[in-house]
View 1 (tube, rainbow, N blue to C red):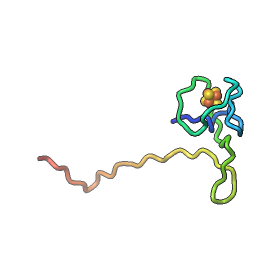
View 2 (cartoon, rainbow, N blue to C red; view 1 turned 90 degrees about the vertical axis):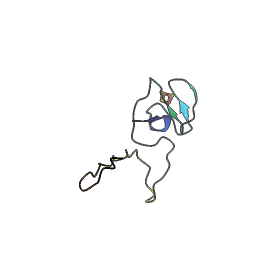
View 3 (cartoon, protein in one colour; view 1 turned 30 degrees about the vertical axis):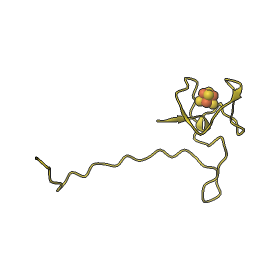
View 4 (spheres, protein in one colour; view 1 turned 180 degrees about the horizontal axis):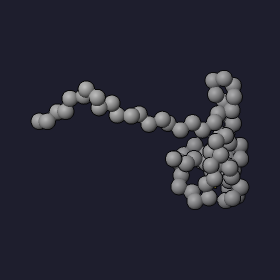
Length: 73
Ligand code: SF4
């Protein structure tokens, strides 16, 4: 899973990290060791339905190999 401060429990809605006690870029990916996943978006952005956005992981596409021809050149 890619981690963002916006999905960390330590991030406030003003993009301030309570662990590091400074403002962070909540939208960029990071490799912070203190990351604690929280599915609710700290930035409180809203979905199309007007509800607070929640993390939704991408669903991996399965390969469809049936009937697919190989190209042995
Ligand atoms: S603990 Fe790390 S991942 Fe979490 S808000 Fe702070 S800097 Fe971002």
